[in-house]
Length: 444
Image (cartoon, rainbow, N blue to C red; front, side):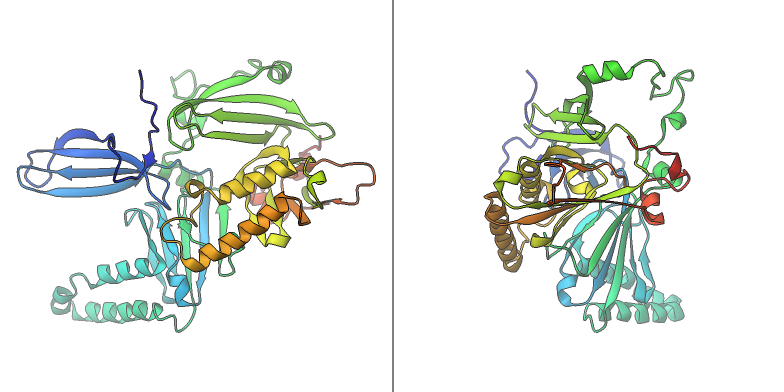
């Protein structure tokens, strides 16, 4: 009988069965055979990781390495942090192998793939850079005194950054999307840090090992990915069937199956609903994708929720939609919840569960300070009052793709306000429409 434990388990020193894999491998120091131990696990702030430890019993040489086990995101991410106080230096920072980091004011850059991935702080990145620059300075002062003098001046500039006498800007860009800068004001909007997602270029995809089906090879030349013929599935069959396809659990990485069904939302359009349940760790996920393409205009929806009587209203939040609740000063980006077709109550509960689950958030853990915990407790207390129907709120959906929807309660529903708008150039670029004439799109 197979194992029922997740592939990626929480890092626990008391785990009686850590399930390490041992491989005999060559020692690069004495060229004898040593042992490499591999452990798949999860650590706070960095999701799934692969720990590798090598030890040679012949010469005593040992080596340790960490690699990310998290899947590559669909888009890259760019964080822009304005460091104004010493508190900004203490922000947790996750930097993957593919992340580059720049300090604009001193013209300093750490290129991607020049360092291994790490979980540190903003100050920790500066300290590591200083240590790297100070290495071999004694020899350098003898052999290349002019170069050494310039490096000393630059090290002094980096040291002054830690005093934060003047604000400076840190830009963290990661094409894999697996880097992060902590928001100490969470779940409220970060006043000093912004993040944006960008579409990778073909060269960046290739750098990550991501290829299109055409690049992987056609059916004739035995490519890995096989195209679906045009008449293999017709719309009527898809609408009447629940399709299943194999995938991996987003929580533990174990093999599981996703159920997919196409359905029609009255007065709106077709959507594709996908549900995944993992038999190993019990994790469940639901996702909704539009079945009708991108609309010619974006949509801005505001709906007033004045009590539990409004909780049954149907709501569709697409995977490109931002969610805001002004009364809580809460903003949820499109990538946080993904696409969901649920009720107002279901959406609010999903927001709370995700904010309160350390497996899916970077703002919880052993490093959480007392001030942040107090703010978070106050936030959840207000959230509970909303779920009990004691506090009125306004739910704001802003979807540049126009694929979000809120059910109307009648012809004169004054609590629901819908506005269509023209997308900006940046929004078209985010949706991959800059090379396509948007007037060719039709609204269902």
